[in-house]
Image (cartoon, rainbow, N blue to C red; front, top):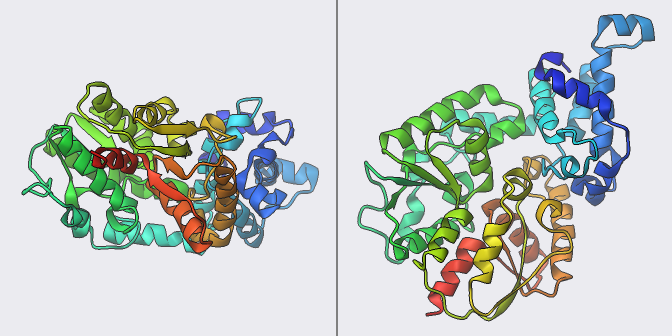
Length: 396
């Protein structure tokens, strides 16, 4: 591990850890795998040892050897089997910003050429196709063709004040495409004049952050910023929490950035959307990047409660303590079996509420939970909050 990848603050925080192990008890990967090596406390202790092993004076005084490349790769295997959910940071009594350290650690391992080779697919796909699935980027807005009544311009205009940044998952994954379709229909009904970037939308760069390849990020950011500026947009809407967090934290954009739950809440409060009764019992799953990451907890709940007939039951672990679904941190690519085990724990918690449906605000969460539910033939409806709102409108 190389020290330049870490800030002075991070180096000090590493030494501040008291090994209380609260982070291990909160870690979805460690709990699902019953493997303490996946916990934050283990990862941090090994990181401290590795950094000290890189200091020549300490090597001489303590007789330590620098970490071999084989050992680096073994350590990297534990580092990348993490959803980057941030729950370890949430429960840390010292306030150590662990999630930032994990990003730096992954960047360090990438620089050391010790990252798992499966992760390299992200770099290749984004450099060639500008989306994480290696699909034709000209097809980013093809989901519009599946709408019942799309606008004649297919939402591809030269000028627009509001941009809907769709994201890779919702643009290409068939199950997730239902979310932008529902949102476009809601925005049309609410009188919102918006546009899509289409093929001029490139990946937001979040997969690169999770993989440690941030050297490629600048090109993606500058292209997306230029595309939005060329449209004359004043507001960008995101249904993907990861895209939203990436723009908020790394783009330094001079326009309003808003998650779809915040935007829809404004439409609900202004009476631009009309709902009729939708009698059903639901629970709400806080996506990690929207909840712990962006601290957006109340808008989705207010939207759900605004729909007549809805009964909302909170999960035992909710808001900042919500259990991860297993879909983050590029984990599915790295260890699909572990991602499935984490999803199992999530679904069991959801079922314990007695709710007939689980609502979330993230395409990846919908995809991950739905995959587990379908694979195991579980009777549970999984939907994004955008789909719930559209369903309430369809009940007219």
